[in-house]
Image (cartoon, rainbow, N blue to C red; front, side, top):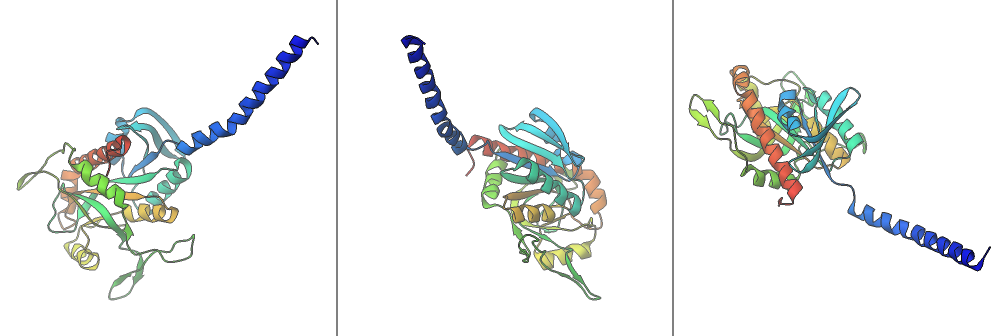
Length: 289
């Protein structure tokens, strides 16, 4: 080997060693930035997420245990969207799958609900500051006694009320100012949605009873009743993932609830989806509080 070749070989090994030495540093810097955050958006029925799914850019769809998950970018935010199916079991299953496979930064649950608070009407939106399951507990001849659920990870009781993430509540309130709402036409004329924090209660029944509505109002100071939010918030809380339930009121959960639901459901679902998209925009562009 000539002196020149020997020198070139030594230089080559030196540069290779230098490059390898920098690899951990480069990896550490990349890891410091972390992966781009992703927001999970769930809804109980296809119509509650269809508008959002249609707006995804770069959409990719895959299945886990038969549930379809749509990924891509929405309002500048990386998202994964799915509809859970109606009821607490379906909602808990889909929430668990999305947490396990996509590791979202936060979870938004969008859709409609029955109104319990008499000061709120169809079209108004309730942000779940507190969410509870009204049908979990003990039944006697006199009453249904609601008790907290149990955390299977710790073996300890959960709180009766799960709280919505403070940051997401603030983001939702800010985002609401930019939403172009779809008007609801009622017997009293057109209504523009009012967005307020409140109490949402969950159970595996569609409430269409003024007696039950009064009971939920008295027991929980409930503003809205639905069939999935309590399960979603429980799963998220047990896994330490921030969550917010967003519910647009489609009826008053009274004797006319079924008719009102059919009349206002699509418009209410659309407005909930529009607010959800506005929240994603706030999260994406750093304009959130």
